[in-house]
Length: 257
Length: 259
Ligand SMILES: Nc1ncnc2c1ncn2[C@@H]1O[C@H](COP(=O)(O)OP(=O)(O)OP(=O)(O)O)[C@@H](O)[C@H]1O
Ligand SMILES: [Mg+2]
Image (cartoon, rainbow over all chains, first blue to last red; front, top):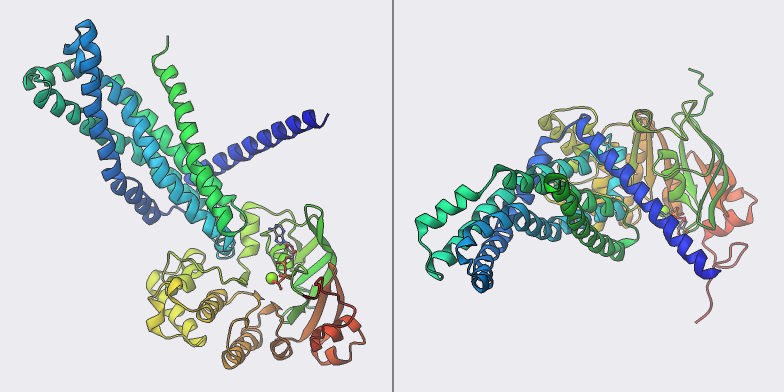
């Protein structure tokens, strides 16, 4: 009996949390379209999310491209398909690895930062203080972050794609002995616009998820430093999981038939 | 508008957290231009009371009328319109640590009244001067200030827009006796010269006597005594006597055990 009760309790809690999350997301979307707008804050977030994430995302991309070329070469040699490396690198990166790895890195960097900042503001009454100063916290804190993350991640992923392909190119040319002209030709002729577009759409979705989780967990943090720490962890973990789930869903929407 | 109508009228206000009932039926009126001080032990729900009035917490039941208008259950734009009448000094200051001091003070002027930043800064510098802080402090960030300085910045922020109603949650804790008296004067000025209605919370009886027209004591989730400040010494209420004289023995029992 107690066991069933526990299951029911957990289930109800889950439903309640999901409901609150959906309401929060809708509230955030409303806040984006309703004035007042805060262009300075949006710009600040875009710089924080885009510009300052470049080093970590770039490093991730270049090594991923490099290892992709290397792995494909040794793997494909088993069925004499080494020449497919340019195609494998470009398709894997633009469709999957670029957006997902960039998303996960940014989730760690930005999701955590957002949750910690907003969570601290919550537990020190700063969010309440905003309301007493004629400022809607959803519009001032949440909307700029949602907007900036959704708009910036596609650019970041585009750059990651290019850097990743470059990493694959370097390894293929200098280590595996490919001809540069043929490699570039194969890369470009095989690439379809939809490969890139689907990756960028994923990036926008991931950006939204990251900011949503950071803001949501920060907003609902309770009880001092420990609460903020918990909120930060939850933001990163839930954003990462949502990225992987929505990655499948977007892929399904684009390519399944 | 009827002059007799209280600025704030609270009836049967209750609020619980889980099983813990903090407010069990508060009835309280605050007249226009009056300075009311609420006293009461730590954890009796004073901060919760003002957060309920501000709409930062939703009460479980009861009514809160501001200028005769019911505010419990208001949301969105309506809530913002009521909120614009208030200034609030938070117990923990609640300064925005991403902004310099002057922008903290001028925040409401820029966000709420749409003042240009330059004008807001001038007002902010004047308000900072009124709480004894010079223009050099204005460019610092809150983290670079001492606790008492933060409190004064928060006070300047609360009064910057000259609101109709100002709430002070422990305005003098953490200040030295001289600065406390400066702040007491400032609060009296807000009420006397600007005609604001003030609700203050304090444990500092000297400060309470200086700033209050009327004092109310909260205990066990209710207002157990209220009266003019002159009557506080002859309240005839044991709880009040014990509190204002700071005695450990009396009807109010602290749940502590000897070492
Ligand atoms: N957000 C909250 N969640 C749960 N309990 C709360 C919350 N806020 C306040 N409480 C509880 O309500 C009670 C009253 O808190 P409140 O902050 O109003 O006390 P107070 O009278 O202002 O005390 P102090 O003089 O120490 O500031 C406390 O027991 C506290 O534990
Ligand atoms: Mg308090």
